[in-house]
Length: 429
Image 1 (tube, helix red, strand yellow):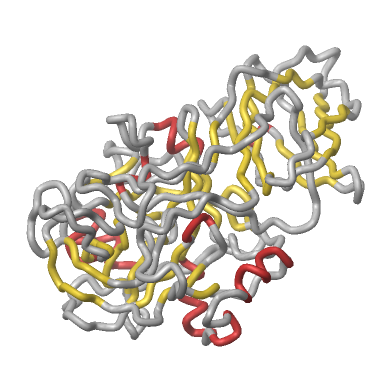
Image 2: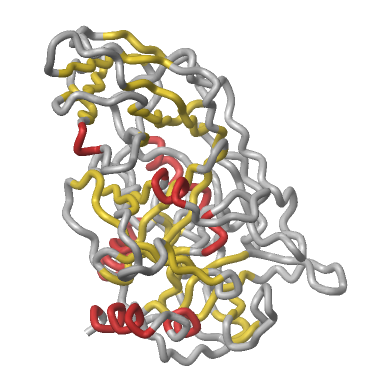
């Protein structure tokens, strides 16, 4: 399930162009009640819309240009999209400054634009005002860089709750205790406190990242995890907007951001698509609709805490009714959450959602929500036994089943081409 987002970025604010910003963020989910429709395979809650009808051209003269964000108490954070629209000098850099602390928040240069990629997204910033300086070496360089899009994220996303058992007593908790006050307030309201989470369980979450996906005019979030140092696994349905029939196109891959450190601190551990095929001459993304998985290669974009570990997989695991499991995910785009209280499998097999095949899906009663799609399902030993992928649905009798669905990890691993399967399993050694 895909969902809305709230920021974990601390302190400093920045930027954007007054022309590029939009005043409000749409956070309406497709499912407006506590049950998705029988054919609803997206479970989408948008985190915003991308505006492309206004453009701010940046002048490479080395002079600070003031940029401001309209005051909006509902704004949580934003990103801007930078576009190289003309031949750029070989040596240039763009610096974002915070007005209050007078320090650079991000520096962008040619190395951030891989070959063939003319547009990149900035890191996430909180709302406010700041300065942007573009400087380039050469004699009177002409403009070549502009801001041609922005995405705003609301302070508090609209909550629809179509994947929890009891709205009055949600069975999840923050995996880590965040440092920012707003996230502390959210986490402290949970029944089970983050301080009660053993460090061994917390370590399971290091391989889990929140993926922010940008399409032509929308953005949403999902969860995913590393199954090899440069292989990221998430849901197929996370790769496209509901109204499109095309999923995981190159524009989506180039614009997505995976944050493995979305946990309420100032550290950055963001990854993006490596622009490398799955294997020589193969596709950029390997996916299957019925098993609802997508795998692609990633590379670090911004790193301050080192490479995340890979998740341990148990492809031959035997799932049983009543089996205790746990899920680490990013519901509603929040920091990493852990669901393990009253979290169990209620049916070891369930028909797959497109082809109705057996031994692919299973049912569970673990609380999740929009944004949890692609989250790893762990057994009590810390092995991944499945991938969460959908929430409550209406059955053939028109009744909400109040059960969540996962895909067996074995059904995914056995579906991989032999070379990729060997690569994944070799890393498990």
